[in-house]
Amino acid sequence: MPGRAAPQGIWIGGLVCSGKTSAAAALASRYGLRIYTFDGAEPLHIYRSVPERQPSLIRCMAMTMDERWVPRTPEAMAEHPFAAWSEERFPMVLDDLRHLPGSGAVIAEGAGLLPEKVAPLLTSEASIRELGRARRPDDRTHSTRR
Image 1 (tube, helix red, strand yellow):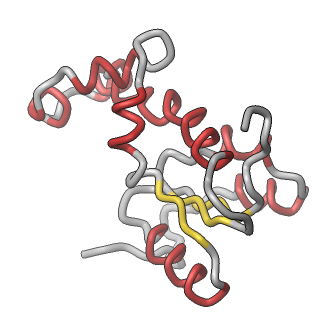
Image 2 (cartoon, rainbow, N blue to C red; image 1 turned 90 degrees about the vertical axis):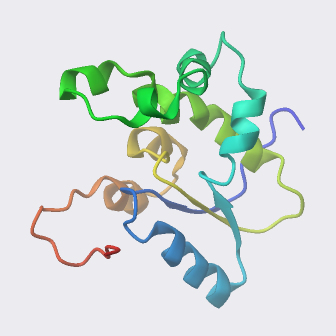
């Protein structure tokens, strides 16, 4: 349905292994919400990628695993196609959410749900402030996996 708005819900973004999926699962279980996972949508996004709209995604998929993940300098990583991966996929996320079957709130979670992309979609000043809140490196309120 072209022009259909994404369903209302909760956006959870954050660093890898910071507890996003666990938090989404707990909220979904408690409140009967559906979950959309950025990582879970990746295979479909790769399949739907076109060079004109997702050039970095296409370049990444052509690389070997070593080319994608072997450590290099910070400067090289900033120029790496993987740096644009989430940026190019965000419009696909919105399209996915607009076309979810059924109705009701959705919890969208994933490292690619960047504040600068999500904030324009929010309607509440409080939500925008909370989304942009930065953690101090010594903040112990986040969860980690060991």
